[in-house]
Amino acid sequence: MNTRRSISYMECSARERLGLLVDPGSFHEWLAPADRVMSPHLAQLGVPCAFDDGVAVGRATLAGSQIFVAAQEGEFMGGGVGEVHGAKLVGLLQRALRDRPDAVLLLAESGGVRLHEANAGLIAVSEVMRALLDVRAAGIPVIVLIGGANGCFGGMGIVARCADRVVMSDVGRMAMSGPEVIEASNGVQEFDSRDRALVWRTTGGKNRWLCGDCDVLVEDDVDAFRDAAIGALASSVPVTLDLLEAEHALLAQRANLLAQAVQDDEAVALWASLGVADAERVPDMDVDAVRARRTA
Amino acid sequence: MTNMPNLPSGIEVLDYEFTGSVDAGRFDPVLVGVVGSGNLEVLIEPAAGLVCTVHVETSARGYGPIWQAVVSDFHQRHPLAGVRVSIHDMGATPAVVGLRLDQAISDLRSLDQ
Image 1 (cartoon, rainbow over the protein chains, first blue to last red):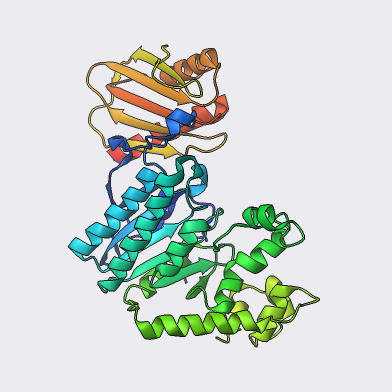
Image 2: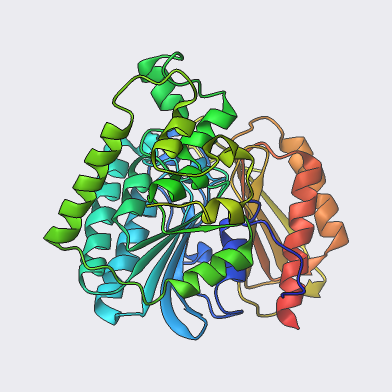
């Protein structure tokens, strides 16, 4: 057992996570804060810039393996991907194609596109997806870690699901549209974004694990994320036609699971239909108990 | 303090300069804090000369006298020379600003060792 007390991954800043996750002192940053590569858009809107535009990128070692790593800062504009932020991610991934590290780690925490930067942000996210798939196709595993307070939503939710491996904590969240977006577009009767239990039942790590949308479920602990990342280092999953067809079949099957309207809680009904034992108790279970109940 | 005319009305820019007595010497830049609501980031870099410059960009306008007091207080605690301090602020309280500045100095000293 580790004698160090548990450090919450969620409570850490992006740079604190980097410092604790990779081998001590091994992180070498590219486009560091003092280089002042900042958003060209925010000042025009009267919003302060960040020296790193909300993401730190560089190389490091993880248990001795050479990795490239990026960490998004959720406290800066909700981790939103702006033009420079996105370009740093793309540059890191393209450099990975050239230098071929053992893996690329993405410590994702983002609400998606930074709306202040509109089209530039949208284009940036799509470029990140393309670059990520190129790296994955080159046989270099891309591992996404999700456990920040802002979750991983919008375009970054898609980016995460493009990766070889997704590691989540139970407090981590991943989805396309965030709760407020669903409520705004479909009404509170469809989704009450202030119902935090509902938000976590649908977007949280436990649900993602039980549905098979994340590959590893961990406690909200920096060491647990580090161990999971080390465990995923050699987990390249080639994108093949068979893999895509299997994924489509899985999604079609899931869509059919709740074809009938459900009277009770929909998340619990979904878990029960997946064959999860004691489905109604899942929200109260600890991570170990939920891990043991995955059926897919 | 000066207002840069090329910046829009949303951001207020403040600049301060002090003559220091403790040469900071050479060190790697230090970054602490995050640009978030009620928070700020502080970047400390080595600079030529015997002065300590403080550059502030803040979304909370009209607090120049308070910044003057907080930054002067900081320089009294740490009369550094050869240092460039750059701040991006999103409405941090004076106490938070003071703590972040102290944190940056603390990180700078731990790098020395």
